[in-house]
Every structure is written in C-alpha cells, then in structure tokens.
Length: 269
Image (tube, rainbow, N blue to C red; front, side, top):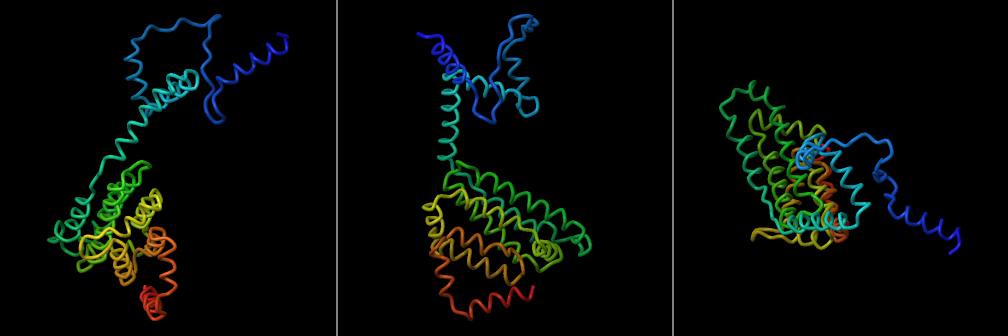
C-alpha cells in the first residue's frame, strides 16, 4: 500500500468520528502533561451535572460520546423511542381546566364588588392565558397522541365559549375586553396543536361528534359568538387550517348575506 493511500485512509477514519456541523466537536483525551483526574464517584458526578443548569453539560458530554461510540448512540435512540411510543399511547385530558376557568369567571369572585373585581381582572387574565399556554405545550407536543390533541382542542373551545358568555358582570366583562384588545393566546394555542396534526388527524378532528354536532360545527359556532363579542379574530384561520381545502371551498360558496352579516358584526368592534 502506498504512503498516500495510508494517509487517505487515516484521514477518512478521523473524519468518521467528527460530529456533524453545528454540534460540539468530540472530546479528545489529553495524555501528555495532563493534570490528574479527580477520582469522584461517577453517580455523584452524573447527579450533579444533571441538576446543574438544566443538565446542559451532561447533554453535551452524552452527545459527544454518542458521536464517538455507535453503541451509545443506539442506546440513546432506543431510549428516546420508548418515550415517543409512550406519549403516542397516552391520552391526556384537559377538561378540568375548562371547568376551572368557568368557576373562576362565574362563581369564585361573584361576591366581590365591581371595583374589586376590576382590580383583579388582570391577574385573572394572566391565570387564564397561563392555563391556555400549558394546554398548548402539552397537547401540541411533537409526539402527543390524537386523543391528547383532541382533548386540548375541545378544552380550548370550551374556554373560549366561557370567556364569550362570561361578560355579564365586571370581572367577565373586563376579561372579555382584554381578549378583544389583541390577546391571541387562545387562537395561538389552537393553531399550535393543529399544526402538529397529520391531514388524517385534522379530518378526524373535524368529524368528532358528541351526538349534538361535529367539532367543526362547534368551532363555527364559537367563531360566530366571538364575532358578536369582538374577540378571537384568529379563529377563522384556525378553522381553515383544521378543515383545509374543503372548508375554503365551502366558504367561497357561502351566501353573500352571511358574509355581510359576519363582517357587520366585526365592524361593530
């Protein structure tokens, strides 16, 4: 074998251990003149690295070792696959959140005077948007099951309806008004969940029927209610993304009177 071929093979072997662009380079052990390595207990090291700065250093070390050692990479991928399959099989319900928000807007602060209810309205809005974001984060996770996504969307729809119908007292009115002043947490949360759904899942979601109407019909009902109360302007986009081309074609075939009526409701906002 010629010297040039030996050098070429050596270079190829070295490059095979290199991490892809954008990832940290593999650790290169220092031998000559390196200080002695402290003989810490490995479990203690792992526990400390896991707890420090969200485990960033531990993640870096694992990634470097994974690129250097194929067996470690296999272990990491198999462990991750277990998480993926577990999430796909798990159905998480968020319905209690809609009941909780209904209670907050209709019962919990019912005895407060108008001024006190006004003073806490910002805090209540914050709690509601935090709840909405939490549902979005969990139901919109990459590998969440269809059942979890379904529960997330149904719960958000119920929350939206509660907000629209909870405007008869000071607290409900103030919360509704703040949602009408540019707060898009509800539509954003719905959209984030829909975007993680496959085409089949979106179609299936539209057809979910509780014996009274389909989910798509309920979303249309919420949009009309939201138009009447000048909130959730982004719902039309969520519905279009959920229902796809078929919905857009149906929209084009709607009576002009219905369109004029919808625009008229929005013009009054």
